[in-house]
Image 1 (tube, rainbow, N blue to C red):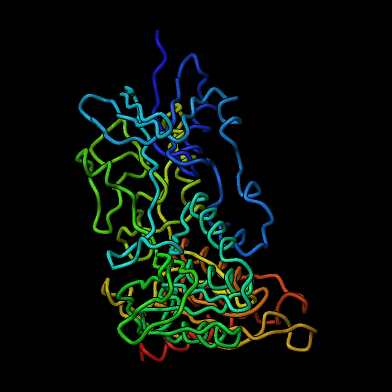
Image 2 (cartoon, rainbow, N blue to C red):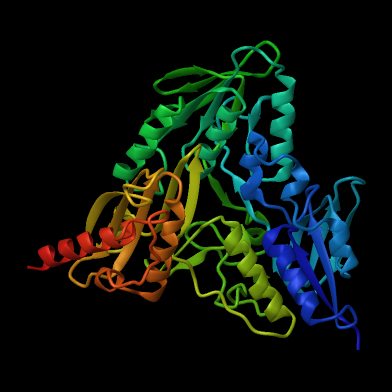
Length: 462
């Protein structure tokens, strides 16, 4: 009997995790695996790009978990610099373009994995394609940015404008600051970090100002102005212009699903592919999808959402590979946990913001507390702010946001577990968390926030 053929579109986290897991379960005599990757790199940490740009990570190759050669050694036919340009679901085949030779050809499949990732949001504004304007979604993007920075030379004053103040924006602002640039962040929203409520975003804004990063809120970019050499010189907004030697786009990403849409595969309200719990594309038994190109179930809100994170992508790949290889796996959903930092300020969130709760019809109460990440008397104790959101009357935990210094961000994991378990804030107050003065006050800040939220729930219900 001839081996089945698995075709994988996309050679990063989800795609190659799926291929590798499938290979562990089935040898090449039973399963032929062909993978297509349009870029120069595979199986790398896109989340590490800002730290490579800043110089905290010394070399590009440090971000690569597995090279194409290593995948090929495991009997995975990985074809680099090859882009899938058409998907024929009925004919069970894909059309590929070899970017080096220009040759196009069709490859049939018995099973298909779509892991096309996400693309940076790049508004259709004048000058967005000018030299010196960069997105940072792939290693190729990061290399292009570094090459652009090297071309600037070593002028005394170098100015970077970051467009957008979400996770990518604040991380790239830090990277540019570390490299000696004067940094301006242009943010269309009320406060940076729109994944937080505005009161918590204000803490991030204040900290960025203290670091020397100029943050301009309520500024909508209208275009990029260039100099005689065609390189970016200024960024125009509806409130003024800002000089720039380099522009980094940190507006966010959207699912890369043009190929799937063209083939008639189902997408959700956020533009991502829709899958079942086994990560199988809805309505298609032999097609799976994972990573940044899919929508996932928000376990708190009960709706699908698009979240581009390597943690999810790798889990999706493991689930897909298990199912393709004859095993069994499911991905039940997420609670929306994310952490980031700008210099020494740590930022974390999980679950719903206040506006998310309102959007799904959940009445809620909130509580915000200030504490320290260590016992107040212990050397190095620094402030931390925790905001907690709970359902009105029931007290079910809905979300947590944390802004603080060293040791603050990873405390959000306690809340992520509580959210996944469906705990109430009153149940959280009894959690047996670790304590010693170098690590926590006697009452951990998360538990202090839970106690205060319990009081808010009781007060709202009286």
